[in-house]
Picture 1: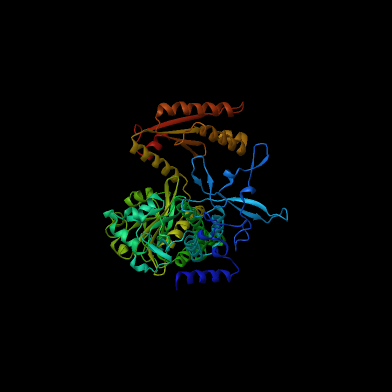
Picture 2: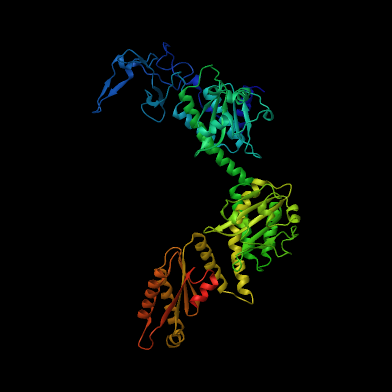
Length: 601
């Protein structure tokens, strides 16, 4: 099927849907109606051009600043018949306006004239704004990538007139390669064309983000192979399809049918068309991905489905089964979800697949906070992918040889809050039908969603347990600050404030008054603390203040200010509130958390 047959086939297919194509509505460069120099055209218009009214020289008038209308001198009106306007230096200027009848109303005996400004380049090719507007409407109306590529290629070929055109985009399975998805006017075997965005002429286009003329590289030996690759597929121009500095593909154009070079205006036209194409392509791609279950919209819907299942589940333990089912539907055959434990700061297993192929659950598997794995992934961007499982010292430190041998892969998706690693999901196996890019996108969404729910679940299980430890969490927070102070070689000071006659105050004024006193206590202390400082109610009548980077010289005045505020605000005739404090500084009074806490107790 030749190019003309393809065009007619395309036109008939679009017409059968009740739509019009560019060919039905837009005149090409050869049919713009611009009269040739010296051509005799009647005032009523040439045969076949009944909708165009050409003005005689005497029909033109000039309007001055006061609104007065005067006929133009003959020397100024010449050129509408094709001769052009003569400037003072004798140069003939090309006409800038075409007059067409205004059918919106007016005198019935004489057509009203509206003037549409058009742009002519040095070759006489007409590419006006109305043409671009009509082209853009067809591009933006495309419902699929196939229809969009058809519109782009026929629009460019029909408007400019080129020997061939093709579209290339990143390959779906491998973004390190680009593939030809549509061609017109040339037969190409995609398997014989190797286009890589990391090198050569294609890389130049992506880096420069501008139209590339491959003749620029004709005599450059560094681009010889690449140059002949593009010549083999009838290439002359590479037009990037880009939006917001992202190059999503390219239009390849052959030489012009007229054997002339591309003009500046034609390149400008191509730039505008490529921008519209990028906008439409991005929207269609998003829609097609969502419909196929691989787009961002589908990931959000999947997360909502998981949320609904977890929210309605009445048994805390069965939530692990919900997660297993969702992961299995995704194609994940082996995984582990690890959560940071408050007491030990280690990351312990929360859930794995029911078969527990790596025997993680039965061995009470946990990953210590001191391992290089935790240190590395705490600062790395998610996902973290390990290519050589047995050659990775980080993994060998954590997993046994048997466990590593049972892994098909190892990919980690982390969840962090405030820079702290709260948990992560490790993927060890996928089934044959799972698409890696799809799994990555879905796991990133699941990981961000799952861990807040796990924290809630753990808290519920913690509160429902027979033993509740409220002090360990405080010690862990202090211990973290102490490690940081040791690493930075800075002091750290603890201040313990105690209300000595708390029992008498509570007996005289009751629970509500005592509660409001501690609320004031907390509020006043907060106003005196800097960003890294923090405080906690340590006992029923004590408040512990931790001051990283500060010594006793800073801590003592702060403690005195708190004591004065509390005694002045809450002392009465019945009882004089008695508030005392003790301080301990690292490393003077202790080099670990327990010794410092003992020093202030």
